[in-house]
Image (cartoon, rainbow, N blue to C red; front, side):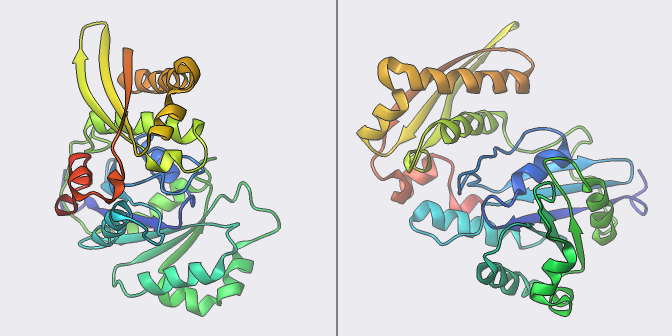
Length: 303
């Protein structure tokens, strides 16, 4: 590798909840390392996805959706976004093209305008777009206003893999020449236990209603890897006894449902049979307790 010809850098993905940040990350690295759902606050931590090819290594940083904080966990997520916008090479602001909350979007634009890094505006979900075009969107804000903030604009569909190759080409234009920071086969630096815990939390997001999924976090307590099967013991942590009952379900039906769906995804990730044992415990108001947040992996000092 000739460092004078090889480009590398860190690219932060920001945007409103459900804009498609995690879907885009999964698409470009070719693996589901970031969980997705239609619920807000699906992403809680910054997550790196690594794309390496013959002439570049792009380290994407997926961030929580931009929202107003209500508890200490929300404060952690807001700090995660702030940290992810420091010491980077490029900002991607991703926007659901059908999002018409223009006041909030403009506030986001005004915030990221302050950063001196190059910026690309991504108009996502064009597979769902109806009679709305890039020109119409730019007309709403004014082309000159967009040009003041963003170096490039691209329309794509992360879900349908439309124009993602063009996005990679645009990203490379703004990256410096530099070293390969990670091994060429690495697609993330996230520990496998954390990815498994998130797979389980994803099924909680899919299958549980109302506020329950937002009060949940998941810890993988133990993994025992054997030749033909991996035994995984994990705990779903919630905030109330009533929530515990909902998670377990009648005669354990909901917990079994969550476990079965999680196991299928984990087996695909590990390429091996998995025996998954799930437990549920209650930690009252854990999202507002600093000690619990640290114990569950939300340590502000380690962002």
